[in-house]
Image (cartoon, rainbow, N blue to C red; front, side, top):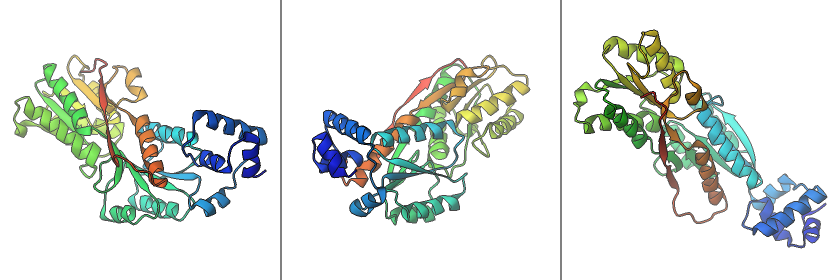
Length: 327
């Protein structure tokens, strides 16, 4: 079965079949006619021939730092959802946070049949900057706003600003912040800046800002950071955390110290994972639109692959605050 034969059965041109296979622009009616013809005939495109003809493969490379994160799974879900609609497959690589592995995946995917690459939530280094700028395939980064790179990212600054402002408006007089490494522009620098800005705007002295840096994006690291805060500042009555995972660990330390949430200590996180709603004390959090991030990044990458004009190559997504009573 050839593409020409499928076109004859569908009553369309071979070019229309090709556009359907490659995710091109077609009317909904024509898409349905072609889909039925392909299903009826069992036609499958020769991907190697398609690659040789178009210079592009039917695969998209996705590089993630880990696979057991709720945020990562939602972003990947958005990516794969859109790629299925556009008849692309996904090639997934996980780095486990190793920067050299990230570079190796970028090199591997450039030498493969992937048409483009989505790189998730990373730390910019000179080597990575060179690898992206010299990439032979289009690259889109999610979760970070890097200079001269196509990015889809979140409003990290205002998400944490709003959480800290609400914490203070609730009457918490001695608030703290648990952040992450400042090498991370989004979760590290921007969220920390948001917490400090809200603290200052409430009329509080910057010198009294209480901050601890969690050693990792894990509940255990959050617990340890909260223990340090309680040791140094036993009168702390509110804490905002850079992520929900860190916040859940912080709640463990708060309870272990004999404190109650929210009666004695308010707490909030960022991300809005499924665990927030089922925790012993449901967690107030900034909801970030992770699935939409994956969809938007995929659309951006496909425009780059198809050399389509785009109004912008950077998109910042909104956030909403989900209050569950932990403040």
